[in-house]
Image (cartoon, rainbow, N blue to C red):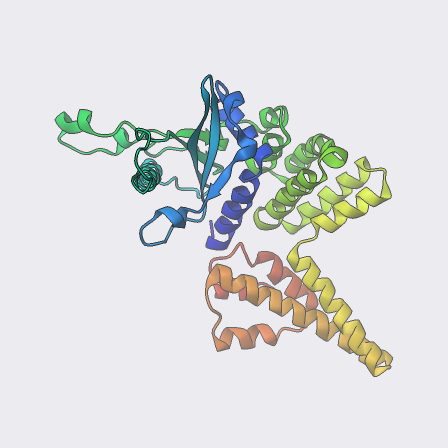
Length: 359
């Protein structure tokens, strides 16, 4: 997966899992035996960079403090979620989670030492490590510290016993996800279907949308969040035509004009907005000239200008800095349909030469 596409997946799930209702849904899947004891609504997010000595954390990792309800009162603990979407699982994931745990404990130890005496006896807050894996291949790498150890084996009993709990989307069936009890888990059916053909992808969305739409009146913000997840997944991981199919399905199922308009607005990507902005800019330039020929030329020029901006912006994220020759080649393209085709491939190719070979 290209770096921008992976960053998109990481950021999307990180933002969603900071929301208590989505986090609770994940915890229900991985630790159902005590999820009711967790005060998820009181979570506090800790930036990974806050713990690491050099200030460089992996942004996709999510560290969340929250209370655990016990018979004698609330006790604080840490949920450490590592979000993984790359096709090759990270063989050091258990070590990464353990590193966060030890740094968190060290931070708590320092805070305890700074308290005035007398002070309560120090106790380490527990850590719940979770790997949220949404790749398409089953996790086939090390899952625990024990699996990472080398010889001599006689020393293994003295090493830390540490194994995260795994939410492995690749081993779950899309239809099982659809039938889950929470809308966030249901929406993961679209993520699970990343490699399915267009017909199967459309079928899953046709069954998913009524479930998500139950949130429209009760939790509009969450409804929008989950539709944005679908929109972004289609844009980054599917063909452009799939988005148009989803809009047709929405029109089949939504009978209120206001809601249909809201869905269409949500489903627009940044690239679509830029394309429309180019059309508007072209029309404005043409109107200012007051000539039909000027209007047509202005419209075409504006649309081409904005299309090139989109290609360069996304291309530099995915393929690296565009040198002067590449910029000149892009700026020389005037065929709007070709520009659109290049735009649609910009996150799927691995080189500028491959992208510019698009006819």
